[in-house]
Image 1 (cartoon, one colour):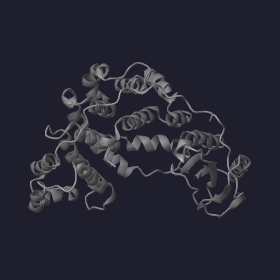
Image 2: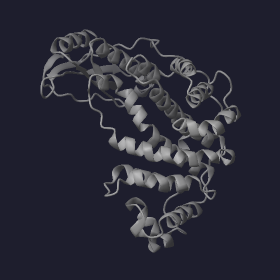
Image 3: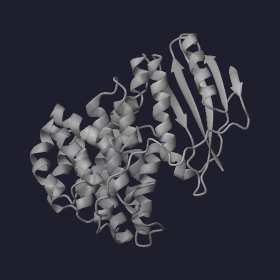
Image 4: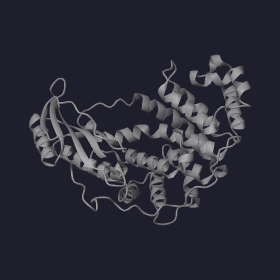
Length: 385
């Protein structure tokens, strides 16, 4: 199965857009279109590039595709523009594309993938995997979720919509025979906060509840680590978007970060009350707390910095690079931060791409890269889908 990538490059002038379109056509893209955006002040170059998947499957092309993304971003940047969209499925398939403004099409075109694939940085050895991350008895843990909700809110009338169901007597009666395990329960709660429309900005308002639940000694280490990871995702979303769309924003492009900023602010407000949990937590949870601490270094560095050497991160491993980045953020040392980012970017292609743009703010890119590393480093069992 082929792997197709749909990209949109935004340019400030028609001449630049058509020049970029010719370069993409010459590079073997299957289709290329040039379109004026409403108002005509910017020009879009939309393309579909198709790569033949290796025998191991299209997923093995993803590192190379991400490397190619850096080339597209650089191409747009040299013309004063930005790469706005880069979409593909790791499972393969060729995305559709509007024919509006089509300037090139070759229905059989495929971009040859060199063997070995160039540009891919060798990743350092992985640090030891985390241990001791098992969820506990669902009845006990979901019962604690109800108890925390009752302590915080008392009645349905004072609880956020997405937590109010926990205060129903009928729900409490079902806890002895729960129909789901703790991970499923927490995942459903977080998923609802993201997806269900509520009158009270559900995800923002349940952050204090999630933080209080993460502080519960009744929950298992896996459950607490999962909740801390959710809070880290909320905290890092603004920085991730800021780094990803730095070129676009430098052009004056708008990125709506209002919701993400509200989530970030609510999560960061909880960090000073979470970091003191360090001494009782598992090493995996401490890694998440480390990344959270970088969002509030003035209040967290005195506790976290002296403890970083206690985390299992053998020299020359990926985790050692990540912790060096965390230390630089906590000390707010710009020279150390630049060095740590270069070290991590030596094998993190996404961070390397961000650093190639002069418009990318360094602390934001560093916090986003660290949060992304933490998510990759945690075992799938504690990640909430």
